[in-house]
Length: 112
Length: 112
Image (cartoon, rainbow over all chains, first blue to last red; front, side, top):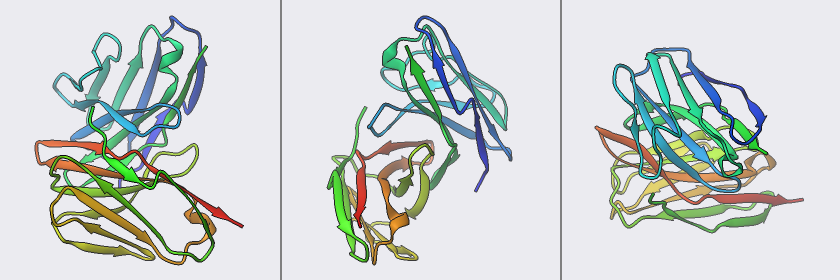
């Protein structure tokens, strides 16, 4: 399985600001995904990020709020824009495809 | 978005006991995955199931892909302290639609 790292591992931010989360993989992968895990909840897919194309967002998530970059096959960023306390969650990237997906350690975000 | 129903929501067991949990869906999935999440970490893939009726083991863990393709089961035999955590099932539709739909999670606690 791929080794996935995320930066930052955690952050505390003020409302109205933005945070960019980085996801780095140790091998080239076609598909990368960004998930949100709200406190005490399960994981919900935000978007699928494929290199060379615009990210595909799930219902309830929009590009203006969660812009995503995928400049190459080993890296992606997710920005949480104009944050509010409701954005306090763990944000996780994953890689893989059909039959298996592997997750990074997550970024724990607290918005005050 | 859709979430899969997982039960039980939580379990309190003694070390050495066997554990059973299940996951049900209103949709048919072609792949079922089971993950374990420890506090402060991303989910770790435990078992992947690819075919209806399939029974797969990984050490003390055994999982089954329901014959209707709408459910899956995970059993843990002879539980040990490191089994503590949250277990998630996840369903996947097909190649070209690789996103994961997660279950609501089962929190396992071992009583000393």
